[in-house]
Length: 255
Image 1 (cartoon, rainbow, N blue to C red):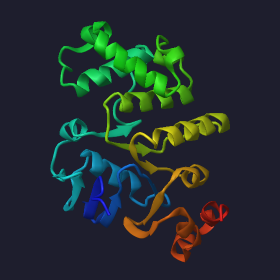
Image 2: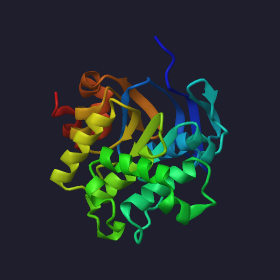
Image 3: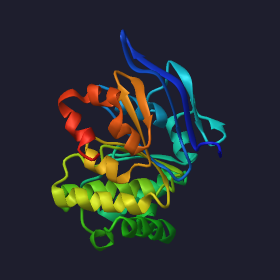
Image 4: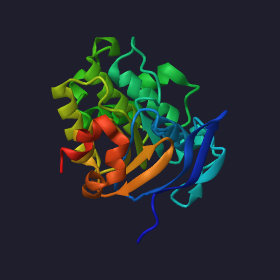
């Protein structure tokens, strides 16, 4: 078996007496869509924040490809090909969709201090931004101010911002949050297409989306991994069913 693109070993994050991630170990293979699920307070967002470098682990290790990134700062992890959708940057509401994406491409290339003017004028940045917008189905909204985009379109724009950094690994934290039925269906379709191009780690409460998309699923409860495997195995896992209690149907209804 080839070495994983992402390897997390015994990752621990404490906040005082609270253990948010408790010796978390998981691998993500190149080209895989790996979902992380769990009840509220399971430690999912804390784990994602450790992967991006927004939080540093108390112990354990994180490897991206052949590089140990456990203590590498967030900006350097981005340069190495790791991107977090929806929380990479705050969208600039008074700027157009294409301006937002061009700025992300500019920052990733290390020219952020030249800032707005060059991002708006440089043809290479505009071309990259338009390609990212095309990829998420927003090319026709390129020149619309973000404040005039729908919530679903803003979610898609944040994904375009992530793609503009040319990631090897894309971390998605609750991409379905706040989306209506038709918007969620459009996001699932988009992610089904993107999974062919980039390795994805998906944190999501929408079990319909998880089971439609995931190659493998890891389940966190109170910061610990209680199960990891193919969707069919997770559906039948008794520990997972017990962990979800009243939400048990969300895991089992697909079986």
